[in-house]
Length: 391
Ligand code: CMC
Image (cartoon, rainbow, N blue to C red):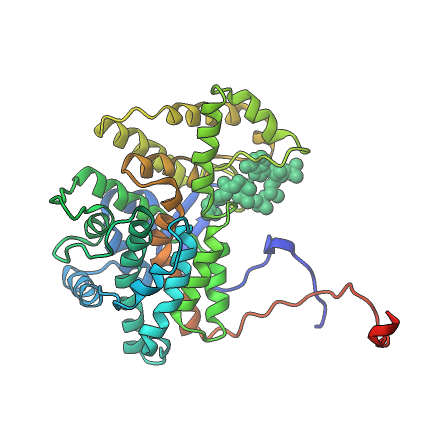
């Protein structure tokens, strides 16, 4: 009707119909394709959940085996990609490296942009599922100066990823099942979250019919920011800063409430959850378990629990319905696995990959129109051009 209403941050604007993830922020409910996140985190493995999100149903044993075999057949990255990685300084943030490399993959897999048939779409999906963990591991290995090589395809998807990350040239790699299970759980919890900032980015970039890989690359860029996936890195940095500062949580609570102070309690609050983030509940329990099983005593876990307790009793947080989100405890688990803080958001990206793929696929199959929001113009009215010497 020509009337444009502005909704900054799209707080009340729906962009699509979707059959992938159900979220009730008031009740703290999250389901993938109808299955509760609690049940999936307990019973499923990450590749099964990826299949569920992307194809709509839990796979049979044969379907899962075929999906995994197809991924394994594509799990090499062109040797020339290493030259691109060589060009980055070691200090480069892994998220920037990952976003660039995911985009660069198009040049090495030009056919991946053709997705008109079901087979072509499947091939593009399998390729990115296969190559993304390699690139994630290489982004880390570049940082620490380890050779860019492969894991072992006979292992499970998550176990192989851990091997690709941590194997040393001089030593036999020993896998730790507790670590594998904990990472599997974390990746499942991050796998999709309906129309969040990075997923909306993937859908909008894909809506111009740019290919899957570049759409994912744009999603990685969106995820990097500290208000989104980058919060997991920001949480640990905040907890460390509080520890270094003598562990005075009250001081930081006061800063978070002070409207003249830009400090926010990282890992708290959510656009949609006005109740406990169900993922945070599972992760908090998992953090306790994995630290105990690995015999690690991380003082920042106590600081995090102290902050949570204070926030849940504080009228500022209670009135605004601010609860711990998925990022509040996840970093503590990543750290216990030996994953360094700058890699936390890349781990989130690895987990979110199937969700991005599923959402992109849904957008393409639904033949959604190009994403193109409107605006209300607030600039100058018509004026005449002044020659440069008269300005
Ligand atoms: N610490 C202190 N105050 C907060 C916080 C916080 N973490 N989060 C929100 N508020 C206040 C905010 O100042 C505002 O107060 P007032 O009404 O007095 O102006 C009110 O709560 C509502 O916040 P908002 O910024 O309008 O809410 P939003 O929906 O635009 O933002 C958010 C949501 C997640 C960006 C925000 O809560 C935040 O910045 N949290 C910290 C960063 C973080 O943990 N991000 C991860 C989100 S979950 C995983 C993911 O998305 O990747």
